[in-house]
Length: 200
Image (cartoon, rainbow, N blue to C red):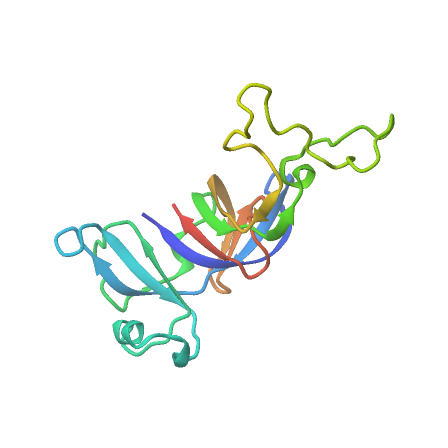
């Protein structure tokens, strides 16, 4: 399985060879370092643990710092796949992906705080005439005549965003190995700087 970690940069336009224009998102994928290889005999599952970036050593616990051999990586993630011929300390660059690859991407969407039913669920609200005064953006009736309670799962106002979004069958439009950039077709959930997981 191919995999990488990248940060969302911004959106742009990409012109294909046939002249068609595609909306695209630029991801910056710096090199990954293999920090652990887990197997089913010792750990109960197969996985490759990778790390990326740098931060102050004071921000890491002594246990994690010891596990990382004194390196203060900013991001540590696991991908459920067999190690193959990889060894601890090996480097994985973004050149494992190529133009035209189909991948699955996961990221955290933008947080929007507490929102009403109209913004959160697309409800239409109340009428604008015939005595409506303070209920223009209300969600309407939330109960029923028989059971005298609100059903679980009812769409209501609440916290919106900050959810893990996974998009499947996303196409890679181009890969710039020299600058560590990956061009993804379409939009990617999250703000600028959001960590994005790519699996192919």
